[in-house]
Image (cartoon, rainbow, N blue to C red):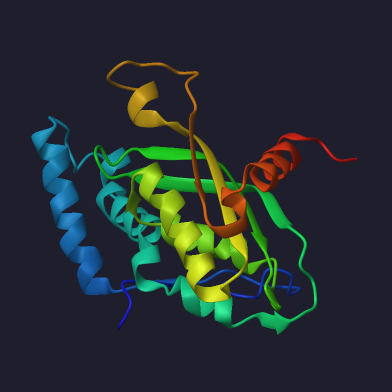
Length: 213
């Protein structure tokens, strides 16, 4: 099997009777499960007790899902839905849910991404932008790099007049350990082209902070 983790949910979200199917490499699951079983033992737990019998396998599958972005091509996702269109105003997709894993402690961070681009002869199917976010977030990450990777992918693939990305996330490595600041939010931003101009950037930031009825 070429991929460690495969999901059959692409483009099928609205199909009646649709059932998500996850498929894993059995040998890889066995290898990872053995490591997680050893980790449980090292932590002082009994991996043979009832509540933990299936935990190593569950964790192995969960980690493969949470990192399956390594096997996906974000640029190919965008190019699959490019359309010629004479539209040159700002396009914004905001409040995109983000779930990722901090590469320093392998604890989750989560929040929202707000993404805009100014078309230059082509627009992209709107659902593809959240997919790009998912592909890069389903890897071990730092929020700063994640923000830049989303920006660069859209800029290099669509070649728009400009791209703007703002991300707001809570990091469990700060909430559950270390400084234990439960209410802290980390905001990162990345811009290209037209969004480097103060007026355009201010319009974008105003629109993502406003509540439209």
